[in-house]
Length: 162
Image (tube, rainbow, N blue to C red; front, side, top):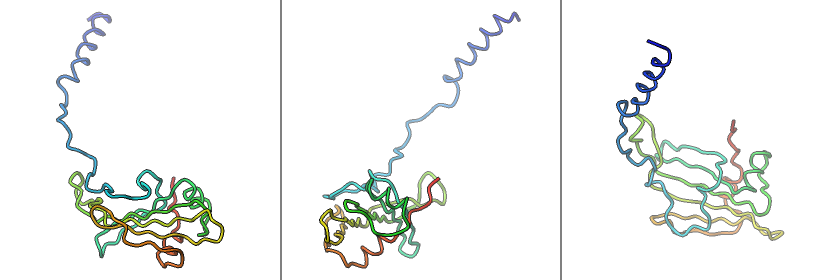
């Protein structure tokens, strides 16, 4: 075959591959709708960046600690737990379920709770703790400072990110 005809032949053959190759079926939804946060929350922590995460095998739950931009900068640059004024942390805890797309994997299911710790801008004011749970998520607890949960959430170390 002449080089020009050979090139046209291969171009024609390769242009048909999308038509005869692997056909794609409409994909099942890959968005985990069960894990969405529904309710009247003061913030949307899923729009923030993650600080760290954990799994509780005994309770079959998984949690992610999120922070607003101010909290993220502090958590990734400091080992202390004196978050600056304006920082907000949110711990989202989900039940776990089997991943239908990956054998043996576990993914979030329904949210169990969302806990917020807000460091107020007012000098001398302690952190504000709020807890939301149920379906839809509803506020069940609010308190100012001194809470063991506030201490637990503010002392979590940031995961090392590449």
